[in-house]
Amino acid sequence: MSTTKKLRLGPLPKLESTKMTFACPATLKADLDQYAALHAQAYGEAVDAATLIPHMLEAFMAGDRGFRKGGGNKQA
Image (tube, rainbow, N blue to C red; front, side, top):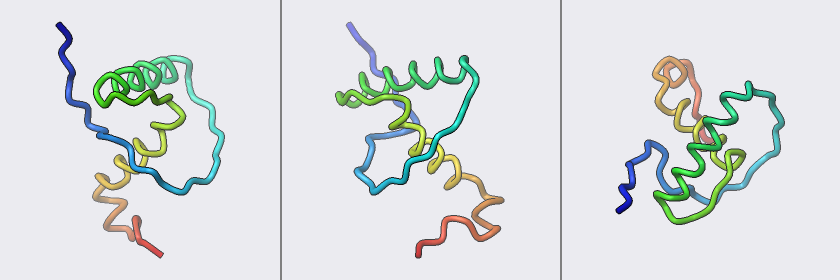
Protein backbone atom coordinates (compact mmCIF):
# COMPACT_ATOMS: atom_id res chain seq x y z
CA MET A 1 0.00 0.00 0.00
CA SER A 2 1.44 3.36 -1.02
CA THR A 3 0.52 6.68 0.48
CA THR A 4 1.09 9.76 -1.61
CA LYS A 5 1.96 12.83 0.37
CA LYS A 6 0.61 16.14 -0.84
CA LEU A 7 3.53 18.25 -2.01
CA ARG A 8 3.58 22.02 -1.93
CA LEU A 9 4.61 22.13 -5.59
CA GLY A 10 1.72 20.84 -7.70
CA PRO A 11 1.68 19.61 -11.30
CA LEU A 12 4.04 21.57 -13.53
CA PRO A 13 2.76 23.90 -16.24
CA LYS A 14 4.42 24.05 -19.65
CA LEU A 15 6.29 27.37 -19.91
CA GLU A 16 8.80 29.09 -22.17
CA SER A 17 12.20 28.98 -20.49
CA THR A 18 15.68 30.48 -20.42
CA LYS A 19 18.69 28.36 -19.45
CA MET A 20 20.67 29.17 -16.27
CA THR A 21 23.46 27.29 -14.56
CA PHE A 22 24.18 27.37 -10.82
CA ALA A 23 26.13 25.45 -8.23
CA CYS A 24 24.64 24.05 -5.02
CA PRO A 25 25.81 21.90 -2.12
CA ALA A 26 25.70 18.13 -2.68
CA THR A 27 23.20 17.81 0.17
CA LEU A 28 20.79 20.22 -1.55
CA LYS A 29 21.16 18.30 -4.83
CA ALA A 30 20.31 15.07 -2.99
CA ASP A 31 17.23 16.73 -1.44
CA LEU A 32 16.14 18.05 -4.85
CA ASP A 33 16.53 14.58 -6.37
CA GLN A 34 14.47 13.10 -3.54
CA TYR A 35 11.78 15.77 -4.02
CA ALA A 36 11.73 15.04 -7.77
CA ALA A 37 11.15 11.35 -7.06
CA LEU A 38 8.29 12.17 -4.66
CA HIS A 39 6.83 14.61 -7.20
CA ALA A 40 6.93 11.94 -9.92
CA GLN A 41 5.21 9.49 -7.57
CA ALA A 42 2.54 12.03 -6.60
CA TYR A 43 1.71 13.23 -10.12
CA GLY A 44 2.60 10.23 -12.30
CA GLU A 45 5.06 12.08 -14.53
CA ALA A 46 8.82 11.58 -14.35
CA VAL A 47 10.62 14.83 -13.61
CA ASP A 48 14.18 15.70 -12.60
CA ALA A 49 15.50 18.28 -10.15
CA ALA A 50 16.54 20.69 -12.92
CA THR A 51 12.94 20.81 -14.14
CA LEU A 52 11.56 21.44 -10.65
CA ILE A 53 13.96 24.22 -9.61
CA PRO A 54 12.39 27.06 -11.67
CA HIS A 55 8.91 26.17 -10.40
CA MET A 56 10.17 26.02 -6.81
CA LEU A 57 11.84 29.41 -7.14
CA GLU A 58 8.74 30.90 -8.75
CA ALA A 59 6.57 29.61 -5.89
CA PHE A 60 9.06 30.91 -3.33
CA MET A 61 9.16 34.38 -4.88
CA ALA A 62 5.37 34.52 -5.25
CA GLY A 63 5.07 33.84 -1.52
CA ASP A 64 7.66 36.43 -0.49
CA ARG A 65 5.66 39.46 0.66
CA GLY A 66 8.73 41.68 0.79
CA PHE A 67 9.54 40.90 -2.83
CA ARG A 68 5.98 41.46 -3.98
CA LYS A 69 5.74 44.77 -2.11
CA GLY A 70 9.07 45.81 -3.64
CA GLY A 71 7.65 45.56 -7.16
CA GLY A 72 8.55 41.98 -8.07
CA ASN A 73 6.41 39.62 -10.15
CA LYS A 74 5.28 42.28 -12.64
CA GLN A 75 4.14 40.89 -15.96
CA ALA A 76 5.48 42.63 -19.08
